[in-house]
Image 1: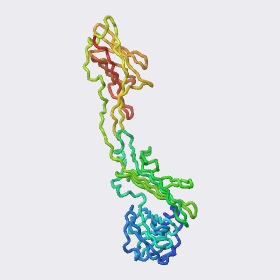
Image 2: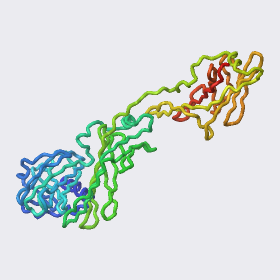
Image 3: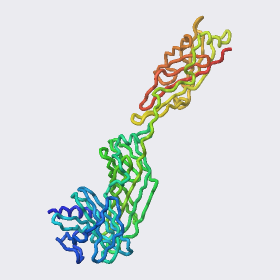
Image 4: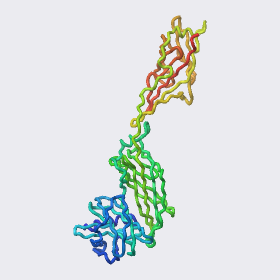
Length: 455
């Protein structure tokens, strides 16, 4: 029963890759048939077999009519392996097998590549043990081959580091931006057309060394990459799963499943797919992407309150100083007019704040101004009113008391927001008493109205 479980694993993988042969025993005279679907190799073939690690490629290995090529590695239960046997001798076609050493000491192979001419062995391992790839030329001619061993979705050796989870993505987001991971890497696709009788054409390779990706968070909480491939990020492990679409020479779009991960060192995905066109022709497609994970973004602290206005901090003047600016006999005098200004700051709750910015306030589609006029209210009192260029209204006269102006209604066109005002030797200042908060934005309006000099 154990044999048949192993057979199912590889034949299912082969079926998904459109490999037509999982049943016929080979016609090699130095291979013993164990059953209709299993074959055994002589133990002598495995002595001194070189060891490969995932991601490695062997040196060229010579084979002949009586000599098989062999590489070995330590596989783990659940590993999805892709072994590619490639001829270094012209006009040679590999026959390749996945082999395990059974408890009875026999080296038994599953017929995963008997009728394929590209030497591709793909399977999901069901045990943690030593495995082998055994190969030689289809016609048993003298030849040499290399073997590239990969684990589907495995990260390159330089991608060490813990998984990149949401806190790490937030830490790598530029200050005051919505959390997202952006990276530039190499995106590569290889596609070749193969025939079971004539072999495979040269692969058509497309390489983009400056492919940009952005990982963003959807409304459902999942982190995703949308282009040039699609992938979903596992928030617990950093694993990436997705797919890419590759265009074949006949115009069809072939979907390739991708697996990989995001770590503090890199973002990496890869996948390989075989798509059958008919009983003798298929496409073999390989896709990969790799980018260096951006470093933790710098954070600069900015104050939560806006900076002082250009007329803050000036000493107030007594009413007599204001009265001295009236022409003789006049009951009022225009002190001046200025645009309403606005300080603004955006703060993201996870990535921090932008610096405060300052510009003329845009109110009702345009810039607005206040004009101030001082008026005599009595023998010992002066008031100041404001003309609003937006509404066209003139306010009540607010009492001036030794440089402090009691503004009892909003003059800065915010609406029901308290104002603070004072007058100095050069300016009349009106500003919002508190910072106005709306969502992730903070605002403060003010106006510095220049007043005429003392005569």
